Image (tube, rainbow, N blue to C red; front, side, top):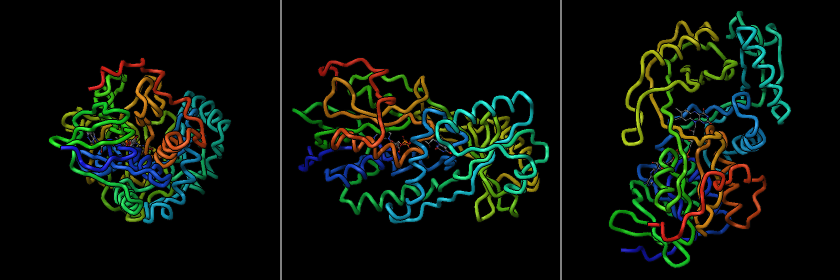
Amino acid sequence: MTLSKVFDAAVIGGGILGCSTALNLALGGMRVAVVERLGLGMGASSVNGGTLAMQTKTVAMIPYHLRSLELWRTAGDWLGSDVGFRAPGSMVTAFTDAEAEMQESRMAARRAAGAPIEFVDLKRARQIEPGLTEKAKLVSHCPVDGYASPPVIAKAYRGALVREGVAVREGTAVTGIDRDGDGFSIRLGGQRLAARRVVLAGGAWLKGMAGWLGVELPVGVLVNLLAITERTRPVMRTVASVANGLLTLKQYENGTVLIGGGWIGRGNLHDGGVEIMTDQLVANVRLARHVIPGLAIARVARGWLGLNCHVPDWKPVIGPLSGLPGAFIIGCCRSGFTGGPLLGRLLAQEMLDGKPEMSLKPFDPARFTEAPSLSAAS
Ligand SMILES: Cc1cc2nc3c(=O)[nH]c(=O)nc-3n(C[C@H](O)[C@H](O)[C@H](O)COP(=O)(O)OP(=O)(O)OC[C@H]3O[C@@H](n4cnc5c(N)ncnc54)[C@H](O)[C@@H]3O)c2cc1C
């Protein structure tokens, strides 16, 4: 059975990138549906670290993340609900000469790309972050960095989407997409949904989704680890990281400290993140305690895993799918939580009038995809 309404756009996947695209399409006047297999934000977008830090971003993405950070700053207004945005700044620490050398060149490149990163001596660093170890060899500081709260983001986007008239279908898995005249017929189990345009926004499941349209996309999946402590007395103020990037931590106002930075667990696309690897968790927490010694009093309350995805050049994949008029894709953003508010907006602008406020060329899916034959769509 095909649902009677024909949407201007159907977004498949209700993570931050799908929600952000859908919201901006609706604000631009399109009739939009979001179809989500579980609930909005129940993929990576609700279980991530929430870190919004220029000091840990790739150079090519800095202009985009800086702009997205501006959107995060006002997200409470345009989403209509608090998203826990805080900007206490970030500190990155090197402990050896080799790390210091790496940090100097990496931060110089990020600074040249627009991130307001400065090197500070240890005395100044410990004024900004009193919890920081005295063993630091080199410390850089970025005052605009911060975090938002992933667990509340889905609720905030749901409210905004519904207010803008977007049809939100949760608990509904898309199982395939067929061409239907100039548009698409989207399979939802026994039902079908008709839309003139389709946006694939399936996070780690993007490879399978692209496959529905005959597009081969080289998506890799990482199972990333996070841990949170019990409530403890204040031990730090900023977002802390290390020169090699394998740490981010921050303390929330309720006293808990979130520890992450790209350590891994076991899992797969079918089951999700299923097994924490103790050696990874212990190493992650030890590193956190090395940087913020006051953490020695804190006990880890819980650890969890989430699926993150990427393509070989580690840049996002955003834009039209060549050879498939009306089909678009957004995903594989390594820091998609930071970039989400902007990147979804750019794709919506591309779809609405072909004039995104920042170029989407670096993210063109065509760099990986060959034009598929329309008959391959099934
Ligand atoms: C542990 C971890 C920590 C991270 N920390 C940070 C961080 O601190 N800062 C940062 O900027 N980024 C971070 N990230 C990255 C960030 O979370 C992701 O880049 C971002 O959330 C991706 O959003 P998305 O919308 O593409 O994917 P997702 O949020 O995964 O959304 C995809 C959605 O598609 C749905 N879906 C899949 N298949 C179907 C189907 N057949 N039909 C319908 N729906 C379907 C899924 O259920 C899911 O909800 C982290 C990621 C992880 C895993």
